[in-house]
Length: 219
Image 1 (cartoon, rainbow, N blue to C red):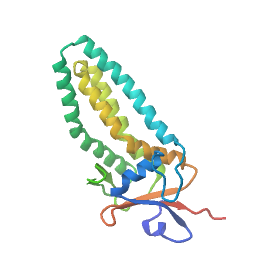
Image 2: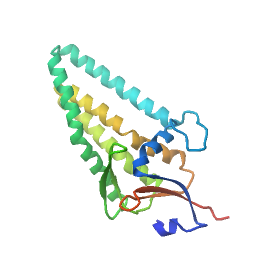
Image 3: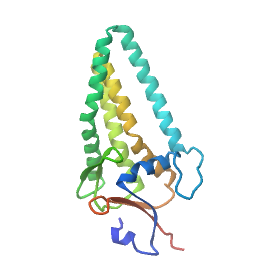
Image 4: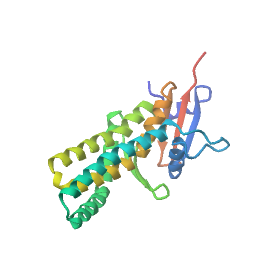
């Protein structure tokens, strides 16, 4: 049974374990990557989230680098390469709304009644949210991973079908994967806390904050 927001704030049943403003989202991501410790806590060793990010960049960078190299070798027209590169960068701005729309569909898939979209200039991001709808970390991971899975599959398929535009597809793939780091962090947050019962909800239309509550085990 999914708890309500009021129930999450009931003393003795749930414990607030984390919260941050939407404009502080980047600080949360850096903390989970092991780059920035919590206040009053010593810096910790590099966590699995940071290694996951490095691995993703290494693999994608290697594959894309090889593909771009092969394309340049076959097509020595540098101007064509630069044009495709520019198209790939420009197309990212068209892909971002699609990315967030997929997040919204995933929220609908877990039962969220209404979906909202917003942006934070300070955190330099756009986002989808479900106002005051408590979700489990497993549901958060599901919502987080869907745009990466769907758009990566689509871009790879497009690369195979229209290899002539390989530089554009490669550019989009690298930029989009880089932009998914926040989603990867949320997935890792679920994985490292999967032994705990944690619910989270967004209040982005009021306090503009996200909350994480842990269910207190009854002994």
